[in-house]
Each structure stands twice: as structure tokens, then as C-alpha cells.
Image 1 (cartoon, rainbow, N blue to C red):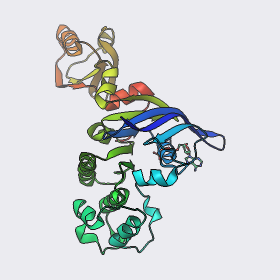
Image 2 (image 1 turned 90 degrees about the vertical axis):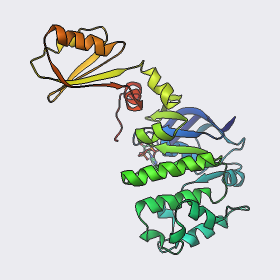
Image 3 (image 1 turned 45 degrees about the vertical axis):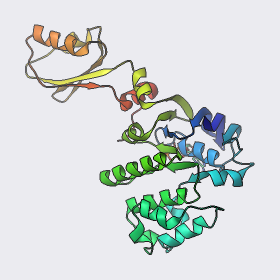
Image 4 (image 1 turned 135 degrees about the horizontal axis):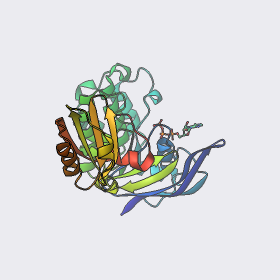
Length: 302
Ligand SMILES: Nc1ncnc2c1ncn2[C@@H]1O[C@H](COP(=O)(O)OP(=O)(O)OP(=O)(O)O)[C@@H](O)[C@H]1O
């Protein structure tokens, strides 16, 4: 059942259209990703869902409620991650949690929450003295302290090192396992692929597709990549002429062939016929990043 519904959302900043007719719905209990490049309109979209910004047009329902008109009721249901600049400089972790807990009628036990998030030893630490990963965990704790049914997590792992990023992913999975619906804004492919049940791809304010990561990948028609290093001269036009091949590219000493069907067989047959020996031959199936490139024509930083 849909817990969030967004229909034809439009949001402008002066004359710039930041969100241009976006529609999607989020099912209760899922991790729903909003994925797109910088400036795509992801944050604006979730800020409208949170009721922090008024849409210019369109309909938004959070558990059947209007985020602007029923602001207090929506705030009880939807926990938003906080931007670090919103906390006073010298506030201690425990004080921040107690403060946010005081905003809710039935808050979670914030000490228990800090324990679950591995922050039990940081209760008296000033927020500004925490590491990047610890700050992110505090912001997750603050998003959850009101016992929301939905948690909106925006660019959760930006700026974290790979280990802290993976730890944070584990936390998001635990939040989901506790029954909370998670809306995850990200521009990291790997994060979206690992965590999200479904994804909305947004580009330049428009919705490109909504599907599961596997469903998005399937849309690129089982695309494959074959890479190798020819050890004798190779005329790549021979490969480009194959019906299975979409593109052939030279990357330094490597040849990268993308295509579909029985691509590997087609490529190796040409190589064998022309007595070209291929070193370091590798075959890769299309991933979410390939789907993103095909659907938007853009790449995302990884
Ligand atoms: N307060 C604002 N005033 C004017 N323009 C804005 C404002 N906030 C965002 N924009 C513009 O609206 C567009 C969408 O921005 P938004 O922050 O929603 O995108 P995003 O996908 O979240 O990007 P990022 O990943 O960089 O945060 C961008 O072109 C941005 O420059």
C-alpha cells in the first residue's frame, strides 16, 4: 500500500523549474530511492514531501495527509534527516537527542537509539567533534527519535569513507527491518543498487523511470560489455560490423565492446578468424550505472 503519493509535482525557483511534473508512490515498508545527478531536483522533491517547501502544483499525500495543510500530523509520521548546520555548535549528542525527542508526543528512548546506532559512548561528546560517519549516525538518530513510520535520508553517505559508507548502509537496512519506510536520496549508484527496493530516476527535474534496480537494468536489454587487450593489431571495424555490437571503443590498450545477445561468442569468433589473441578478456553484464547512462545519457560520479 502506498504511504507516499506524489502526482505531477512542479516546483519553480523564480523562473527555474527545479521539479517538472514528477509522479511516484512509495509503498509502506520499502526503501525507495531517488537517484539522479547534482541539481536534478531530488532534494526539492523530498522537501515538498516533508512539507518544508510548497509545491507550485501537483498533489502530495503522506499517509493520506497533505504535508502543508496537515503539517504537524505529517511531522509525527515522517522523520527527516537534519542538515548538520541546523544544530547549535556546541550541543552534545545526548542534548540534541533529548531536544528532538521533546518535540514528539511519543518519542523513542533516545539512549536506546544511540546504543543501536553505536553512539552510546558519544552521549556527552559535542556534535562538532564527531567524525563524519558519527555525525551521519546522529542525523539518522534524530530522524528516528520521533518513531516515524517514514524516514527521509538525503545524501546520507556523501563525504564518508568507504568503510563508514558500508556501515551506514547496514544501519539503513536495520531501520528498514524495523518496519520503517525509507526514502533515500542519493547520487551513488552502488548505494541505490544495494539498498533500494525501487528507485525513481530523476534528471533535470523530470522523472525518467521508476522501477526496481533489477527492472531498470533489464530495460537496457541484457546489455553486456566485453573488454580485452589485443596483443596483435586489430581492425575494430570488424567488430563494429557485428549485429550483436552496439559500440566499440578503444581505451588505451583496451578494446571495450558493448552489445547484446551472444556478444562474447560473436567477438571471440572474429578475433579467432583474424588470428588476434585477446589478453585480459573480461565479460560484464550491464549494471544500474549502464541503465542510468542509457536512460539519461549521463554518468554519475562513483
Ligand atoms: N533555494 C533555491 N533557490 C533557487 N534555486 C534552487 C534552490 N534550491 C535548489 N535550486 C535549484 O533547483 C535545482 C534542483 O535542486 P535540488 O537541490 O533539488 O537538486 P538535487 O537533485 O537535490 O541536487 P544535489 O544532489 O546537488 O543536492 C538546481 O538547479 C538548483 O540549483
